[in-house]
Image (tube, rainbow over all chains, first blue to last red; front, side, top):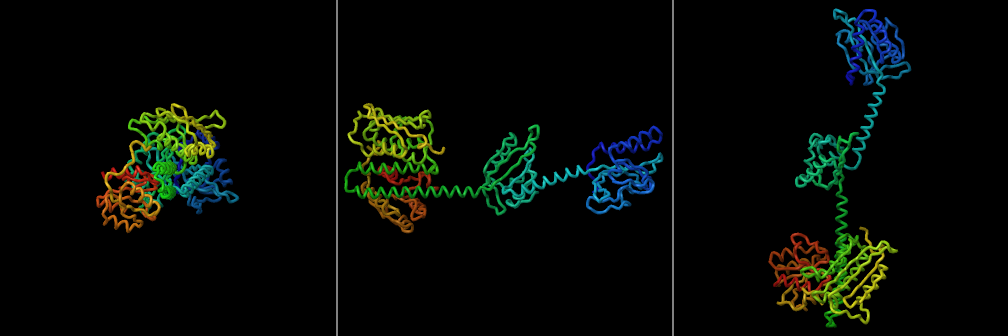
Length: 480
Length: 127
């Protein structure tokens, strides 16, 4: 209760004063007077019976009164109070003990009651005065106002309390570690979730709530962050008090001092089981939807097959089946990416897959990565199917040496900006212009123009069919 | 023209094919396709319990197994077929990568069906 921090400077100046007083000649007394009057602290001197002999102006300021010299004892204040709020009667002041034993008392914290009732916090030092024989002749007491220091301490405590409240109330687990990674504090949620004690978790004790299979990977990355100073982000499971593991997103950031050195690490762990479950449910729904759609397509296929049973036109039935399958496979591509879109390249390669030769020379596909939105993917999927089937029946793919070359680019200079694609067939039989438009042409030309506001041109060039399409970017582009 | 690798034609042998499918029209389609290829259909069976019985007791060379029978996964039937050493093909509307272990590498017939795909799979399973 008596002890608080005191700088070595303060101790030295008190002994300095005591020594000056011990010396007895006039010059010394002059020095003593000057020191006594100008010292930056309150000082009073008393005799061996604790009767106050003298005091300086500072003491008057802090006491708020001028005690009668040679009469009052122990202390010049109206009343003294201890930090715990209890009264300290003057006779019980530490000065009594100091006078009796000759042993100084340092850094005593008391409150001086002033006229008007206010209490001033002061830090007091008592030094005995001794004669040449070593007997105690009195004591010199010095004290300083520590109001500011106490306010600063309270402010710090308040901030710390606020921080604790914050840390214990944010819905994540959080903790702090030294620069070397040794964790010295966890918030309330950590202990609540894991069901552990501070003793078991401090330092590297958190290993106990990790999945042993995942721990090596986590440790490697955490240690790498500690070494490099880079923030850390990772998802891994943590064991709850019930023994079950749940996935947590963990983020750790370093805190640096003014020189840029890391002084501590702040970490949070957020339970993402709800998000994971939601994502899994979403995936499940998408799969179910995909399954449903395909079943419907198979049903349609079956109905058509029954109707087409009357015709012995195998080609017709296979063409029909082919179109349904193209639709279904485009659908698959879209579901794979959670209906966000499909890559133009993937769409083409999927359509070409059944026709790929061993050397892979039948197709040349070239253009920037382009994500199509679902609508564009379906429309283009149908168009590519028609072009491919046509090439297989009458064009480049009907000959082993034939080649289909597809190139595309994004034109930003045009107004509006557009995706331009060119389909070029070579090495096929001589091209004959068709007299009437079949369903295939309709699908290609109308499908793209109606649904995507695209412009399509089909050229029956003698060397091979050329199809060019220009689709407004807004109609073609997906999110990614 | 069909892609070069998959010319149509009759299968080498007439197979007895167990068909497990809960949707009538889809079953009809498969029955027709199998008949065209010269094979005989055992079934079709639309219920999981009846399918399990058939899988364990009937005599057949290969099975086409719908992955989802009335909302339930048909893997127990696959187990029974695997135990008997009888080859089988999954028929599915789910994408290519959705078969559960230990069947993730098993052949799957995608809906809607393609004749040449069916033929190819049977040729591989019953050479």
